[in-house]
Amino acid sequence: MQRFIPDNAETREFPAAAVVAYCYESKRGPALLAYKGRQSKPARYLAFGSVEARDRLLSAFVAQEEANEASKRERKQAAHGLAVGDIVYSTWGYEQTNVTFYEVVRLPSGRSATLREIEAETVEDAPGSMTGSSTPKPGQYVQGAKDETRRATGWQTLSAGQRYRGQLYKWDGKPRRVTWYA
Image (cartoon, rainbow, N blue to C red; front, side):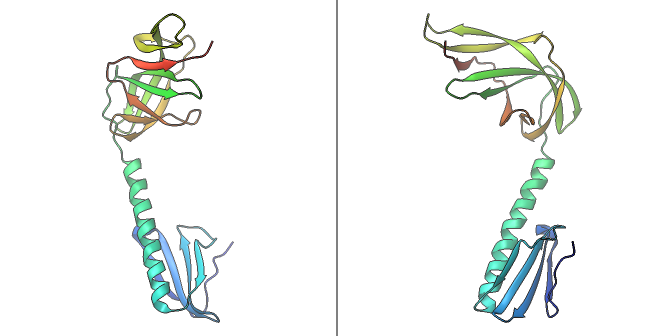
């Protein structure tokens, strides 16, 4: 599908925001048609009461998209700062708190780490309390656990992957709180 570009349009390109805007005079007044990246569907297609209003909206849109692009670049270049043998964890659950621990087994790059799930020891606070703390057992892998590679999302933080939501954080050596029902 081709992009629609008005005949009398002035082209304004903003490479840092990955935006191309076409400013022109429509039947309704000053108008703006802006495309993001290589998309064929316009990100903005509006008419305004004045040229100043159009330019204000365009500059706000470009500023927002520049911030989005900078954030994308930052995430792609994030280094994790982890080493082989480090333990990372994920806290998850609904109406209960679960903790899953992983050991870093390989570092393919400074922006990704290969992990394998490890066993954990859970100690109940008091009999019948259904609360306690969980501590990992380094080197004791969960039966059938497979290696999984995760991308860095920040310093000592990895993406939990497609199966799970959230982040994996480097374990600080302290037991993590857990809860359960029946």
